[in-house]
Image 1 (cartoon, protein in one colour):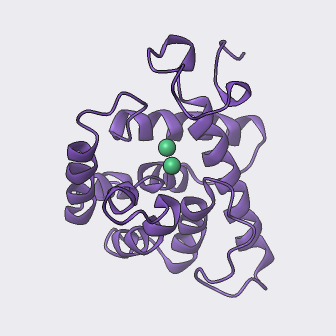
Image 2 (cartoon, protein in one colour):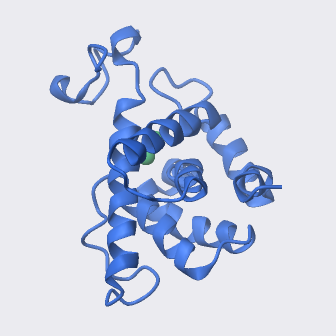
Length: 175
Ligand SMILES: [Fe+2]
Ligand SMILES: [Fe+2]
């Protein structure tokens, strides 16, 4: 079984997904579910191909599956989900056969998918490892851009009351 499938079937991951699903039952805005994660994975992978980013596909998919894993904590305790997701993602990745270097890169992308990747020095290893660090920032950038681009605002009934500013919304198909 590939390691992305290990994440999908991981008990902590499925528990988080069940909780997010319950919290979002009545939500009229974009949800945080497996179809969203796969949209993000595929778009991020396209960026990786277009820019020759050379991030392994499995790492991109792992980061995409885990980038919103802290959402339930946000609903419960009002902790920002990019922050809440860090420890959860670390535990899941350790249990899904990822190496420490891979976990560093993926977790940094989870933490950075809303724009905090550069500033957080507390995650994982010291930053003297420039290659690892720049890969982590690149993956965070791909996930962040893919996350935004994945949302079909042009067809969303709730777009008028969504708190995204109009200039951030996807109001037309971008080619
Ligand atoms: Fe998010
Ligand atoms: Fe997301």
